[in-house]
Figure 1 (spheres, rainbow, N blue to C red):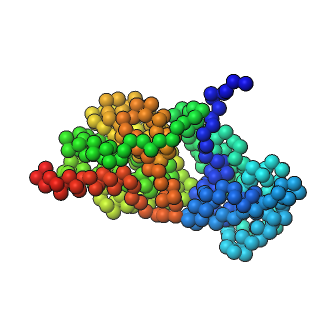
Figure 2: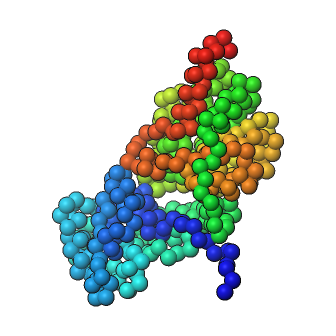
Length: 377
């Protein structure tokens, strides 16, 4: 049998985890994973830091054969006792879905005062965005989001999937993980661009809560330019529209914009919401064509591979991602430098303000050292 080179064999995000993050974005109080105790353990634990209580029905080998409905009902009772929630989500897993457990059969035991979302999902979908829709469709049925927002989210998820198929983790069968270019080398080069008077775009095109760290790179660019007296050469764009997205997503945008304002860092162009990272390309292209075509370089933080390459023709591109498997595809698109914020996810959960990034701190530190060692320059 010949190998199928199109088969994606490196690990990819789980639909179950995508469901949990979406429940977090809806501000659901408790999510109960109906499956083994270790299912999605890492992310379930991290989401406890972000005000989503995640419990498990802890199915074992016996339940795989005889079913785990009694355990699920008992876990629901325990969740109500512990947290007095206004909303609960029952989330399927590979185990419960394979043996045909009906989540809705356990809803009857829940008080009518508690909204219950049954999330029929598992980790076997080709794209993890299926896990998002598994939450949003029943949420719309309960009136937790509007039909208009459901339609909008469906479109955004389709585009996000397309981006990953073209230039992301689903673009080839195997992607070698990489830490990308050395941060201090890229920081030194960026400082040289600033000192030589180059005009630079700083573009935040980040996904939801990841923007809390990616914003720091945009801050560091502007703050460094101010120290060097060249902030007039910097234009900042951000997908931080405070009126778009699920409740938690809008809250993230408000927090970030408030901090930019507090630090007197101007966002010259709003290019969309924090859930619109996959569809900002046309907006950025239009802005560059109309106003910024003479710029020399761009620093892109978040999901750089979602932006079109053509508008940046003639510009030097420095891009920042948090995906080690994303380095090679971004380089192949034509980006000159790609660096990775490897510890971003655990540092951007359960917070409400911008957190320091490794690259941002590196840029600031090298700038400070250069000024200290060469005070006349």
